[in-house]
Image (cartoon, rainbow, N blue to C red; front, side, top):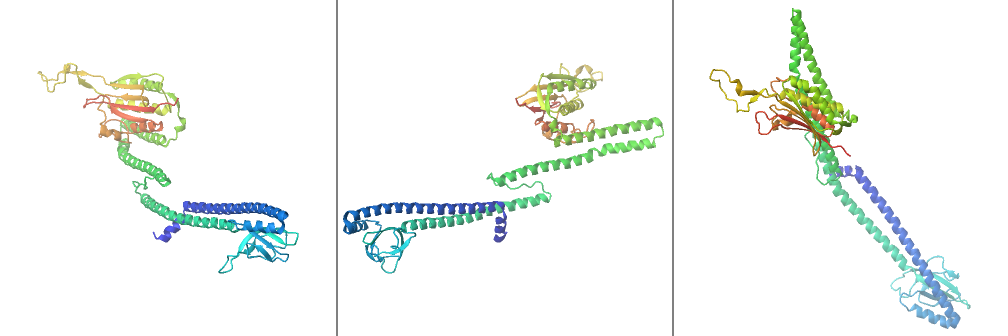
Length: 497
């Protein structure tokens, strides 16, 4: 970007305009303060000068009263020889200087008795090599014989002080202005570069590359804070966009099969001649339709939970009671599936949450354990099963002992808060697949032999995110590669006292 354009952008920025306004305001305040202080100092010096001159006039008058003109002249001569002496002049009735330590005085000074109403000009004896005029203030009093006596003070020191302070102010303002321009250029150039980088990243993001991030310099200034906030927002948008893409792909893949089956069953119903066959086909259509409705209801529930539309319904609830009710509700279903329900629920554990959503999450975990946690047979206590036929050519049924798999519901108070876990004794989930199974429509059963939509754990994770907790998946049994089982634990944050 050309320098002219950069400077134009720089001076259009709010920060630079505010800086310029502050500098101007500071300069005006500094100028007012300096002029006020110098004026005040000058007035103080003039008042002190007048007081000093008034004392000298009184002493000279006393000297005149004591010894007449002779004593007056001696006193004035002695005082005029002192370092930094005042102005001492004796003039005749016509204003002509008779004695004193000045060469000439501005006409009209001796006309009136008392303080001169304005600073007057005078010349010194040592003003050789050209006429030099000085300013002074004085007090004039008349003698009995008509002579005039002037006692005055040069005003050069207050004028020099005022000039010195004003010169210092001008130099300070000049230095401040140059420094401000240099700082503007240095900071503004860096700011423009950062804005250019942000603009370039924004153009790529606008073009569809959501993996781009705004640059962060690490200085921790407002640019970095803004970039970090926007990067967090972009990360969330990218995550949601990726989730939406995955959901779209999964919906297209997972709903294609049931819709195809639904169409085929409808076609069979149309072509069926026998009423019983047609009735059976219609019943199958209803079953497939119900499954599709359940799928869409689960998707709608996940969307509502992730959007936080029901976050305002969180109240203090008894998690122990909810877990016990869910276990009791599913106990007949568990027994029908050839398993047994085991409960280890600590009483009176409460969390802040939504009762319906937590109950739905527990139901999903128990339903998953029923589907994938069944073990029909296992080794007997007498030893491992031996492969091959028995001596009579048949399998030895005594070597196999039926084991009833357990589904364990446990509610405890952990270090991080209240925990509720559902454990099964099935094949479990490999550690490298646990991050995948909580995604929508992801099912490790590639053959889709088990009923379900692949949305159960997704809904549980969304519910836990709404409650500020987390879903943790782990093995039920360690060291069992064949069937380690799966333990799904919902960890709720502890309630504030």
